[in-house]
Image (cartoon, rainbow over all chains, first blue to last red; front, side):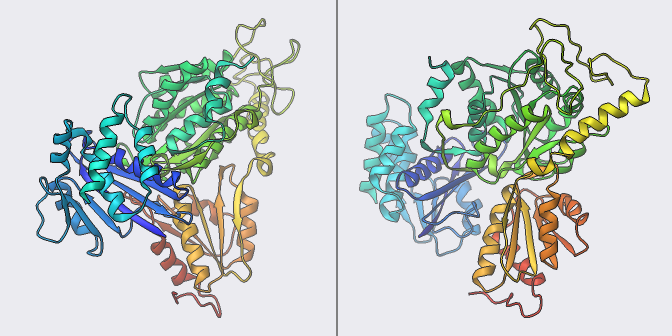
Length: 169
Length: 393
């Protein structure tokens, strides 16, 4: 089993952290995982991408070659990265932030996050949806990985966000 | 009683974490006993400084953010003579600035570790993209005749292990050791399993007895620390065994510099570390190191699955150059393929040890080789008589 997952959006949306959490969840599942990132010189606003590979075999080449899943959380990232990715990839987009006329799983991650009171957890909602539809990590490991990587005091909010993601899939 | 360091680090014992290569290298330094870091942040090495700034105060150590990279290595060298185990970390532009002090550390026989997380140059080049363009700079960047030790990790686990090894080699041979990481490995996140703190082998500094001189008498003389009761003189100028300058006697300079080189050259077999994976009947061998060794290994395994015998040699030690291992490979195959993220720096070194063709497979521009690119080169060049290269499963 080898799954290549690409997460894209703009800097500040937690794209890189999402990749880290996803990879850590895979490690907790006993799988091999690597995560790499690509970003511009700016820390916020530019296109950001995080690549995760999860495999039951050792991972020689750590870059995504042909993603199985592409998650896009901003229009510029969609415009920049969509053409690089083969059509076989399952596409997941934030339906309020990305316009696309192809078939995709559309979830309003940012709006759902606003409803929970903090837009910053949109990436955690996205992880829940991604895990549900792709089955690339178990829910238990994903919860543990989220809890290991968030500030103290936000556990309840993040677990709610993860649950919202699972329910939106 | 448990030291502050033991109690902090033993919390990591035997745990498996999902870390960056940079972070793993920083923890390797802490496990090796590093208690002083001076540096200036730079992509893609900043995460090393980040971990050290957070952890060193917790383990009774010191972190200093300096005004530039020249000062960074100066501070490291000073700290070592004051008794510390010290390190700095940088990338290409900062590594260029450190070259003068690397020579000073070689000449004064100062054990220290310099991590260079290579990025695409020259100059500011592609600041956020990986490269392996500093391999020869690590060897010859500072002036004058000298030897150096440089190691290149290929995984996050190895970033940890080779940082420990760098500290140990630095102490054993009293020389600066360069950990030649690259942006690909430094910014790669994968799993790493920490050893138990107690199980890590740490080379301790050999200190001179009062009547023993610190710059001669044996190939690797024992050191003396500042402030520990005797007068010593430490200079980058040519010096006698006592450390006192003598910049006009030919024999003094020749004796000193040949000893500084001999202590590494004679220990080459002991220092050299490689990963050899040879198979019967190979006509072509792939030699790689650092990040490039990963797709290289992937390509070799795939070629073998397709029925083509290919040898694989990964250099873990880059300097001193593991020439015996390269000769062993050269004796077995007709062609050596050398993929690297530069325009052929190690390929040229390999050529010195074989009459057979050495084919550089260079790629620059910040994108690592893919498995297919290396596999194509194996197929195009590996079809010795009767080889089945060219067929894919």
